[in-house]
Image (cartoon, rainbow, N blue to C red; front, side, top):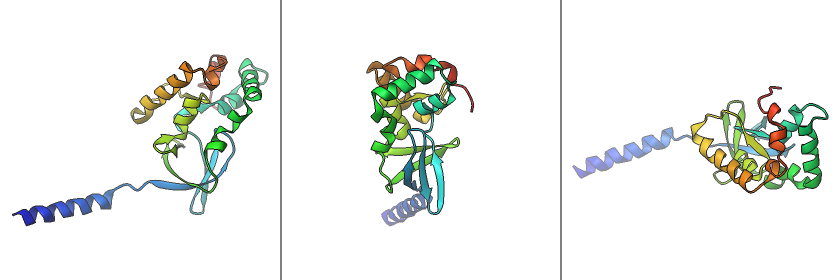
Length: 172
């Protein structure tokens, strides 16, 4: 009888391994900004935008010329020029990264289980998308943003998020 259990267990394990979802791996080709990274899978190249967040660069692009939002972001980058290149300092060209595609954006796992989105939130270089409803990431994204807010990092250091509120829901 125990041999039957071993055989059934063996087939169960083999069956699970056949249906296990393999991670999608992509090679980083370039980092344009904190908002855009160019990756490739085989011969196919694509742009990866951080999932579930609005980056400081995206807010800057959405803001009206000469608006208080745009001027605040320019001023922030003058004071902290390395923040503009945070993604570039974190990610390595020609490195293989695990990614997941979600709603025309992607989760790029840049530091173990931490996604680029979460790292940008924690640094204060992005904000949660209003009404973000992905239960898998909602909690960790909210915690990362709370960390940045309570430690006055990035956007929260100079209250840029309040100056840019009109542009949070604006579509391009």
